[in-house]
Image 1 (cartoon, rainbow, N blue to C red):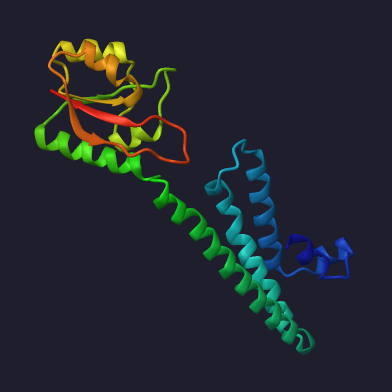
Image 2 (cartoon, rainbow, N blue to C red):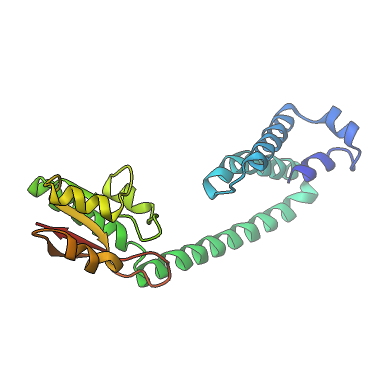
Length: 211
């Protein structure tokens, strides 16, 4: 899109193209190039970090379409190309949405969020102090911290110590550590709340333990 905006101004002669370029087109090209440069310097290419490049490119596309409509010989071709682009965009967006949303329901990708929401509701209702235990390798599913509104995981040994000192009333524990936790926790009961197993994602299943 940027090369098209530069090349169409003077048959590919860059210096003359820049000299005769309208100010709005020049600004959109600088905006787009600046976004691409900044995005290239960011190590992680997450989707939300690519979004800032999209608006100037869309505006640049609109400007190029507008220039094409000024010439009668190009008008029919511009209309046909625009219709084809809209059709392809609709098919791609619809297919991508179905590809993401439908498996999300089938594979229970919302399981941790649903489980954590239920835990927060129960904790607020009963005024529980609660923590979430990390997995065996010292890590955990980072989303659980966000869902449970906690700042960090705690190791099982520390959780057992705090529990037995009556410093909390509930614990969220990975299921693969449940048996060892129940043997060490005093007056602990397994609550009915349990996260569903996410079929296509790695990570532990969590269980709520209360007094």
